[in-house]
Length: 147
Image 1 (tube, one colour):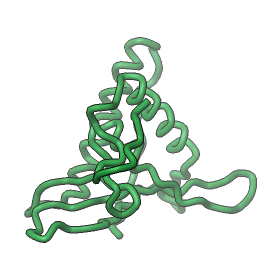
Image 2 (image 1 turned 120 degrees about the horizontal axis):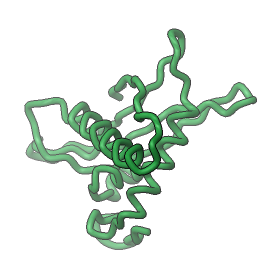
Image 3 (image 1 turned 30 degrees about the vertical axis):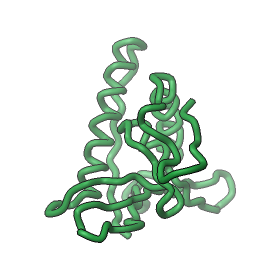
């Protein structure tokens, strides 16, 4: 498991992730996504929050959340999935904003860029797992909501 770093800017370094860490993140996210509603009335969403923009405007620190419905009670929970997404994308998690992913770039929607890469990585992992386990392909339709 990736080591938590108490000092410096990095909480979890991408250099510390193992293959097991990435597979654990995949399994955990699949479980979370399966608990999300996805119908005409309640659409699943990943909420992206820009925690900080660098002084030159060329980088952003972002965190990611999903809403999880607690069945059978009618309550919902906002779940931070930044750490799990960082594992899938093999990116470091920084202390800024209580745990965020740093993305360089300007001139395009970096939130979309991260989410798009995340779903491509999830589908690639699903294809590898399906080849090994002969399961169905992992597919779901999600919205990105920018905060």
